[in-house]
Amino acid sequence: MSEGTSTDRSTGTTIGPGTTSPTDAASPTYADSLTDANSPTDTTSSTGADSPTDTIAPTGTIAPTGTIAPTYATSPTDTTSPTDLLTALFDTADRRGAAPALTGPDARTLTYAQLARAVLATAHRLRQAGLAREDRVLFSVRPGPDGVVLALGVIAAGGTVVFADPGAGPELFAARRELAAPRWAAAESLLYAVARYGRPLARRRGLLLPPYHRLGLRHIYAGRRLPGVPAGALSARRLAAGPVPAVRPHADPGQEALVVFTSGTTRAPKAVVHTRGSLGAGLAGCGPALGMAAGDTLHTDQLMMGVPALIAGAHWTMPPYGFAPAADPARFARGLTGATHAFCVPADLPAVVEAVERGEAAFPATLRHLVLGGAPVLPGLLRRAQRALPSVDFLAVYGMTEMVPVAIATGRQKLDHTGPGDLLGTPLPAITLRTAPDGELLVSGPNLCRGYLGEPPMHEHATGDLARLEDGQLILLGRKKDMLIRGRTNIYPGLYEPSVTALPGVAEAVIVGVPDPYGDERVILTLVPDGTTPTDTLTASVRSRLPTLIDTAALPDEIVVLDRIPVTGRTRKPDREALRTRLRDRVAPHPTEAP
Image (cartoon, rainbow, N blue to C red; front, side, top):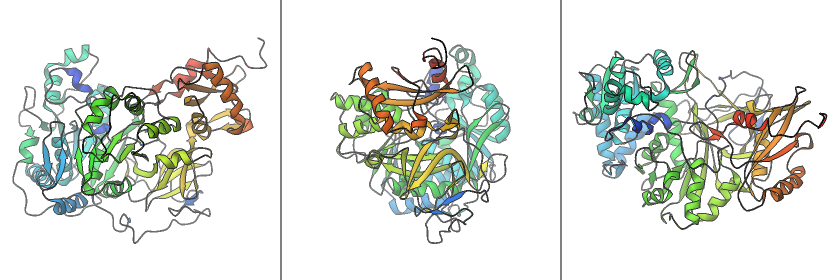
């Protein structure tokens, strides 16, 4: 679940052009774009297709154990005829021609014809410079037309984009580099400059940059050339302005295209590998599922939202570098002029809604859809957002780095769901879902990644989420690792938290277990009020309603009201461990203890 009242946003650490201070390293890179839509990135490993689980067919039926999943010969994302990312993009470019494709933060616009030409020219020049098939390129370029062209150009040349966060710390960066074994690096000129000449200043400001100029790789720089850019480095803009080959790349869905680091440590980093086929299947299907079509306009800096818009023939516009809607909701709303679609993480939504309610921000009449991803959306927040923006359709995307997307739900569908758990929506076509004996959701389909870097191929992904299918709709019941054990009862917080959050006066509800002196767990329900009800009244009101929402064996031992829930990570999900630590000294003694 997301932090419903947070107004700031964690970003990446790549430095970009046009700035003069290492503090600009807070601007996001494309590594921030491929994050989970609801699930944490520290998911469990893949499982074999022959594990004793139920199979959930995309039609909404649960097949008997051991049933072979159906094939989809007629589906446009069928595994027997996979969609190639570049083929889909170039086909759209051929159709759209002079229509606007991509507008950057500086208002520079590329038409579809110009975008395709720049990508093909970049690929051609990179091959001439020696980039070979599946050469890996450490990629630290922030969002913008140059970054999009360069990333697609690397893939079109046969290479692999490896999203690299230079602010991850020297040890983790080194471990990731060793695993990825890149031959090239692509970064902003300013990153090279600061890494070579400004490291002491960056270190004093808490930023430990790797020595990019000493990596022993071939280099590509974005932006104006600055001191510190290695000799012989190629200019991204000059690559894009070069000659264009007569023939575009042929379809190659099996080509390794993208590596994204997720969980892992310096000793054992973990990275997801996607192919042109898995990206094509997921991103080509994402646009139509979100209602994007030719002539629409999407406003976002998220690559995994922008590319589906391009494949759909829409116009992708970008906000300023590093801009978070919560930081300036009025500016966010002004940036949506002419947009039909926009993207927002749930942690930014409260500040945006508050600004609309106060009359400080006005959304354009053109905006039809606000896409939410990166964390679950709380019912109370969603209800409030729909009241403030009645003409906007909210769309919540469920997916993970290993498979984007899995399911999409409208705001109305989520609010109409009154049963246990969080409704995730209808699985996309050609996706097969299964549940393991313990209820864990396992996913597979043409948009599933190839696997983890250095590990055997993945046939399906164990999400770490507990789920079920009900009338064709996927319902999230919680996270396996969040399970509590009290006595002989297994308690899954995610099964009950959405229902409690939907109660009047509640902005957020999180259930955690706090160890007692006897080795059991006390179940603590933590509430964040929405400000409409006094604390004492809220506690009593919620306690009286709990028996109708929570199984008797799972009722909390204690209700604690806090002003905020601690959060963690880029997606601002509740930090349950930090919350447990905070609650240990606050909760009432165990009933069998002496007062």
